[in-house]
Amino acid sequence: MRLLLAGSLRLSLIVDVRTNILQNVWRETASRYTEETTLVTRLWEEVEREYSSTGRHYHTLAHLVYMVEKVNECHGLLDDPDIITFSIFYHDIVYDPARQDNEERSTEVARDRLTRLNVPADELARCEAQIVATSDHKGNGDPDTNYLLDIDLAILGEAPLLYEDYSRKIREEYAIYTDAEYNEGRTNVLRYFLGLERLFKTDLFYTRYEAQARDNLSSELRVLERIAKTDSES
Image 1 (tube, rainbow, N blue to C red):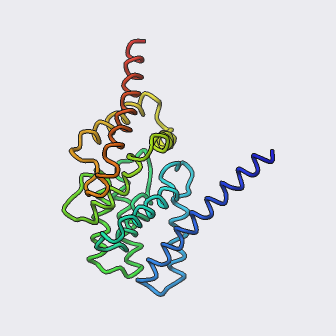
Image 2 (cartoon, rainbow, N blue to C red):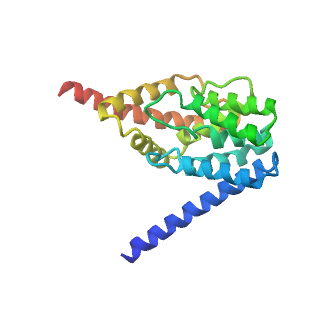
């Protein structure tokens, strides 16, 4: 019992630390555009609430922390760190596994909230384009957008145990689907990514993550293909 309580306490502390990190990043970024501290706080509370909502297992505050940490790794290479930070906070603020328009709906939320923060129109348009780009991860000519996409996919190139944890959490988010339905959809996703000429658009992330990401994706795909073969033979 003591071990369980100690483990729960450590987990609670980790969650609190992560939340505090994100809150500080949010406040520092948003406060460069407005002096309305009440608005900044209210918008943060919305972000925290949405990313902590029931049914989220991977697209949580922990995912945002991971992405913010990756921004720090390439901060000096970014043209507009503030906008990419806003894109991180809002790119999954609307997340419904049963829908295909989450990025578009997230963009609408970002447009409204950042307008209220007095983000200039040209910067707002850039943020919107970055969020929409996360729908297919094909990249474009904007370097900051490519860094955002690479940061979002970096988990694919982590060590196998971390990748397996990510994969398990994604399955949990799609719990509304049967195993057969999910496996078919997931197989298509894996084949899509493996079919891309480059998973990572920037040289920095390509060098660090491409090879391991392809190994991880291929390993998961082989498992799903074996399951499909077994099911078809039974």
